[in-house]
Image (cartoon, rainbow over all chains, first blue to last red):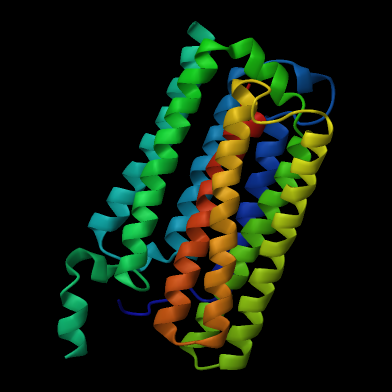
Length: 98
Length: 187
């Protein structure tokens, strides 16, 4: 595979985004305060899963450098991510509806 | 000759590192995804037990560990950048820094396990804790294996080796990023 690397600047920027999204997850997941014992609101679930998707995508495309790979691999791994998070959301909905 | 060897791996040649590591990575991703699905089904059957048990975890500590692992991933990616420009010593330093943060992750996780065991929360406490120990324990085993791989490429620092070990390390990162909200946050 050709070494079309992202470069240090892009890596540092991605790291900053990943840190920010982890903070978003912590806020969305209401890890402190009175809301800690309550079920999450729908907006919180969307925030946590949205941040998770974007973080996972950044790891694949920038850290793992799949952006330099073929459209087939990029599409396959994005589809895998959507499927995995869909499974998690499906399980969550199943518990809510049960 | 080298081009012919690379093309023998077919589509796997388009991925960074040794194609064999990708067979492992893709297999592991599928196994973890299956576990996540089974966890969701189990939670649907015992929602109260899962939600009450989740309250006994420390999501803030899990969040800090997420940041530690993501920073370790950055160092691993920077090691490739250094290796690509031929800066071997810098590459080794980044790899060692990635390993150091990997060790911090392990120390935090062990502290968490000891704390839970101290509270009498074991694999057999309930279904949630069975999943908690199995999923995080399986991931922990991958962290240890990844640390071993990184250690090997500090010694044998070819571009292919560094790409191979860091690809595995990023997979460890990726799985934790999905595992963390599932176990610690969603309720």
